[in-house]
Length: 99
Length: 311
Image (cartoon, rainbow over all chains, first blue to last red; front, side, top):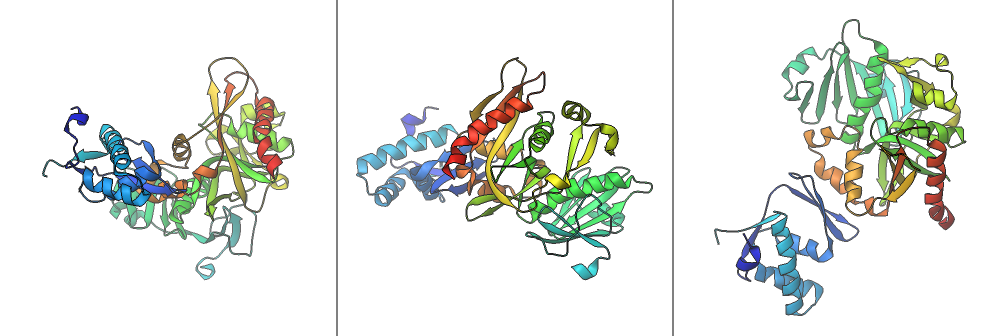
């Protein structure tokens, strides 16, 4: 699946289970228990990950990032899309088909 | 606690250990340990061992109790981070029982107390603790022994309890003994007939090191992972960066398999995250052939020199 084609602001994302996140000097780090991989989500990524605690639209995540880091909507949108692509590629989140 | 156990109190791993079993390699103490007190008692565990849900054929778990069986040796129960119960098999070798008490049981107990047990040797270099970790055969004990020969004190051999205080990892002393392979003794020019062999490891020897032992905890200032290269060449050192540090510390956690089984993965990961960023880590690779301890030592000191100069 080419995720770039299907992602829109309305796309709703859900976290895959089995990830443990922790704080490392202000950055969010994560362990995927299934594949045993460690990830550094960074500061912005950590906020995005937290926003995903419940199934949420990309649009809503963009709003959160825009407010939290006080950046223009365009920047927030670009960052969120880019980061979400990596989360999908690593199978850490899934597109909520029920939405 | 003291009243429940008849016997002497020993000091090891930051614990005051009241033990019904003599533990002659440990120093005695009257003081409570930095991490607390623990009782080692004798008890009949046959029924409980039958009843406890098994994680593997030789490992059982229920709530805050971990049990395991070492065939023809003993059944062990480690409970709440405060009590180790031992049920020796008929005719068991008590040296062997003791090795399990001071190894596997203490490893589990430390994790129950939320203390990270690192698998390796730790030494005092420039008044700070440095851990040497690595697979079996990587040369941890040989290098530790060489460093001690150069006048550096031993913090711990095999199990290094690591506490985190205000985001700083602290290495807690184990007990004053080193386990060495015959080959290591030969390299070091020691006469193995002076030391008693460890159970079932006729070529591994217990060497007491009372005069070269660090008795108080020290900040853990770095970790060296020892690796062996098939190729000939000099000893090399590379920093271990980023998320690979988590992997390295997880890999060298004592009995890491138990971390998932007793359901403490989240705690383990969180505690690593709390200090891993501030702990320098390096991989020190030596050629397979020959005695590299002197080269490893000079490379270690070259590597930590900037840290030493900062102090």
